[in-house]
Image (cartoon, rainbow, N blue to C red; front, side, top):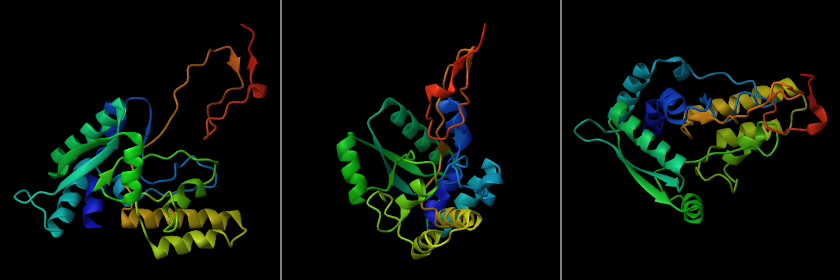
Amino acid sequence: MRVRTALKLGMDRDIIVNKVKAQGDMPAYGYTPPYTDGAKLTQPEWFGWSQEKRNEEAKKLLAEAGYTADKPLTINLLYNTSDLHKKLAIAASSLWKKNIGVNVKLVNQEWKTFLDTRHQGTFDVARAGWCADYNEPTSFLNTMLSNSSMNTAHYKSPAFDSIMAETLKVTDEAQRTALYTKAEQQLDKDSAIVPVYYYVNARLVKPWVGGYTGKDPLDNIYTRNMYIVKH
């Protein structure tokens, strides 16, 4: 867990979002996007740190795990074929090397092989992304359950499973939201993933098109809600 946490801290999300992608994406601190209905997430303490402090803490964790400048950690980073994914993988490897001294070997695979490798768990770190099927936190969180076929992180946590099981028993919305927050905190505590950014979709909208808010988390656009403004 110390190595996973170090990788999480050593990733400079601001550079990825503002310099590499530069499309308005949001730096991520968890799995469920904060704009998801039913999510009321709290930012973990580390997200408020400067990148310098994150790097310092990451190096301490790596040292505790036996990795130093003289004996650096070396990992493989798996990504599927795409110009953007390649660009992001190169950036991630460069940031981990620069920030916390981790050597990264890039491994590229075509989509089908990439999925097979992730499901088999034969990788060190793999690029991943998820878009919700419905606007509710379980569309994300359920994929991290121990028995989920979508759990290609191979994360297994009785504590997390127990929290998610509890969400099925409560009928009060506030209680359920609190449990979702607790589940996200468990994922962060275990450093189950390295959250990098939350997706956004860029749209060009004519100024005389009314009724388009751009605030639907699923990016559903209904023409019945739209109209032309006199111009």
